[in-house]
Length: 514
Image (tube, rainbow, N blue to C red; front, top):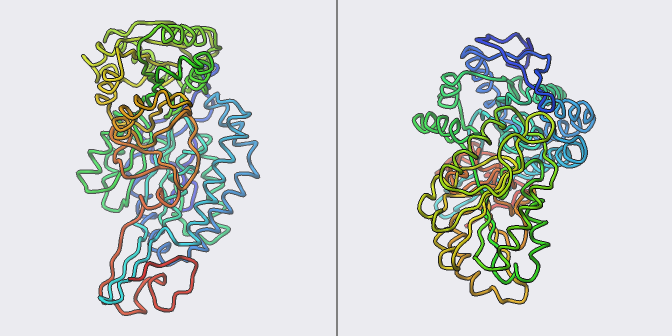
């Protein structure tokens, strides 16, 4: 039984059960056994995190930055072990996906968070001299991070964006590993502990539990010692956690589901439908479709060229290699989503059923439905099919396409492709304002799959893509502010203020003086 990391020590869990990860390529259990922690483990972790939080509030941004940078260095020094373990647990390709894309992104995020911690500008210090009122953002308390199955590094509970943002804001992290890759998360926690020890961080800065039962998980996010929670995963589990956090008045930031609609306007299809078919199919099937920004729906206006376009997409789906899914649960969930879409009247153009790939897999699947039928049951036909699958919706005209967009739930992204010569501009002007209100990130002439780590990025969106439309999981400083509280100081003596608000402050952060 693998130990948990609590209060700076690797120790035996107070376990109520056990589990093993699987190798998705072979469908076989991996040898390591991991505990399902009881409330006693969570209680101890919360006590240690509360102590760590108090200590971190007295720390300089330089010390927190030094920890994050040391952690990034340790990850790079142990890249081979991390990539090997993640490959076993997820079947994601070692290269380029894990070693060349996700690992550098992870260390890059940590270093960006370090820069933010050192600079302090995310705190937005504001000084009202006339009224002697000052304010800034400060850390808000221990943060629990629930990592997803599809990004074991860049969104991992002990390594990813939520982790980096929470630490940069001066909060300790309780990492709840994803059950699909507990070994990978364990290595990250080991390296984080080494970096924390080397830079003088408190014992409870980074802690790790692997799994809890539902009751304990709900109690954890609603505990009075908890500052906030970051969760990426299934909508069902996320909404249960949200209800518990909301009842306790605790912030929780969710990334749940998204079909990321892509619109191809008529004239751009007329001009380059074959190139667009290749681009769309490639985006849908990349990584076996297991991206939160995967285009799960394409919206078209009917026409002769549109039919050729659909036929081309179908052929590309049907002829592409079938990839391995992340786990048996992903395979089952994808099959269930296909049944829901078929039951709602979507026509199968290709796929459904067992795939010809290795291990857990489903055939590359493409559905089609008329906009009229979609509008009859938009809720069901927006069911997310997480994996190598997409739905084609064909509208009679641009007006009906606008109705379809208006019926959508919130999404992370939405994209409109239009002709470069301006011949689609009238249609674009009719559709873009509708889509703009449904997505966090609006794209033009570009597939949504990539998410750049940029201060201008919004990896968020209206519900149910995320729990709140005003926040992003990617992009500093905005991602850091999720885990901060705005503190105001009214007529407080100078020596009692946070350093960043004192008259003698000479640090790098720009202050808003009014």
